[in-house]
Length: 243
Image 1 (cartoon, one colour):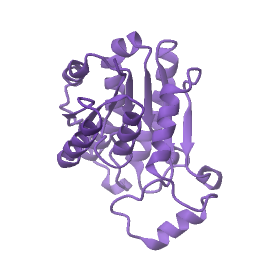
Image 2 (spheres, helix red, strand yellow; image 1 turned 180 degrees about the vertical axis):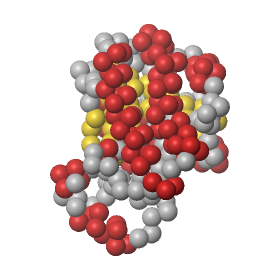
Image 3 (cartoon, helix red, strand yellow; image 1 turned 90 degrees about the vertical axis):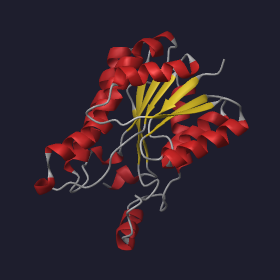
Image 4 (cartoon, helix red, strand yellow; image 1 turned 60 degrees about the vertical axis):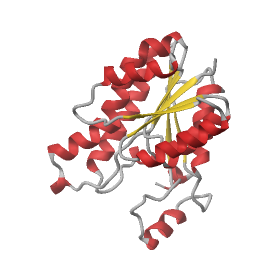
């Protein structure tokens, strides 16, 4: 029986590339989505054409009303097992000090840090049984923080702390690591050419990366590194050297 990976927010961008790559390694895929239903259904169709009954999708809103136990129970019923949890779902948008509100706080924190924690909690027994692994998608801007992204920065710094804490608490049965993307894909609302050129000038590799770079790193941590836990790998073309 194939191993099974859950990818939160896996319908598009880095999540979809990760789903495709892990699927190519004979891992069955479960994808959660919120608003990207069309993309999720299309990805499911494509993967199931390649290998029957190898991909399922699950609609989940990771807000303050999320019932994580039900989500976990529903997902475990799909294939009857779970080997890998990839916490990829994320909220990313700027928040200046005057824009900080309880609503914005809840929106960002619930998705970026509460969801990885609670999914880890409710999948703990299953992942322990499978000697599974968790990978959290963090961000190179944990340190130093990204200007005018107060709540986002806090959430990703918390996710890094969660990664290291879980790695210690869940060992030796479950390994927990993080992957921090650099300039892999421009934000969909980013049209400032000058800003893009400025970022590229600070990347030693002088180019953006590709989603496949993240997918391959995730696969390495899941399947090829049985002695690595508690680590955060920056996939950034050397950008961290010039921050």
